[in-house]
Amino acid sequence: MDKKFDYAKAIAELEEIAKKVENPETKLDDIDALVARSKELLKGCRDYLRTVKEKIDSLDKDN
Image 1: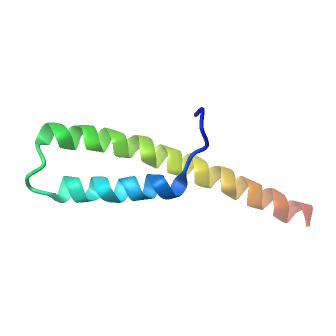
Image 2: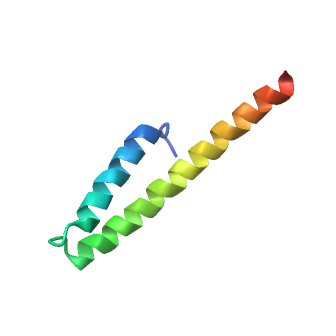
C-alpha cells in the first residue's frame, strides 16, 4: 500500500457495495466485480485493525 489506509472510507465503500449487491437491478457481472472489491477492502480493514491492536498491545506491555 503506497498511501495510508483509510478505514472509515473503506467501511463507507463496503456499505455502498452492500446496497448495490442487494439491489435486484444490479447485474451479475457487476456483483462479481463488487464482491472482488469487497474482498480487497475487507483485507485492508483486517490488516489495519491487526496493526492497531498490535500497537495497543505494545502500549499495554510498556505500562
